[in-house]
Image 1 (cartoon, rainbow, N blue to C red):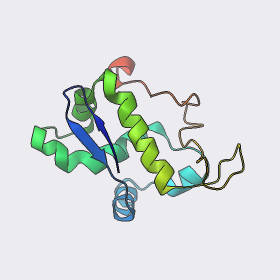
Image 2 (cartoon, rainbow, N blue to C red):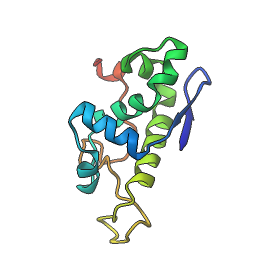
Image 3 (tube, helix red, strand yellow):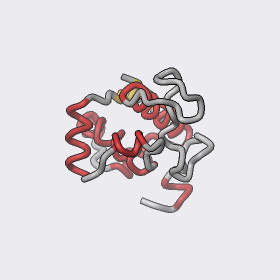
Image 4 (cartoon, helix red, strand yellow):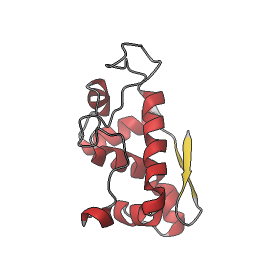
Length: 131
């Protein structure tokens, strides 16, 4: 489990487990295991999975969709959310690092190849004008 705080000081816990992953993959018809095995997970799946994990908690704050949740996190905290989600990926998918060849010591960056090779936080919806 990894946590981060949003711009309002609220703590969000991201805890990836097999049942959550199973439900997420079935609801989205995607395979994060295959993506992670190939060394990258599309950024939209990172955001979608994080939202999938916290959406029940978000309802307490009357946040009912991904866009509103990302807006509530704020630009200042989006990197913390992404780092927490990537740490969950690294623990859940302890894959061989394709650059080092070490099994489990340094998990491959699942964001590699997703248009975010630098490992920096993806742009916020406000920055991209997207929803």
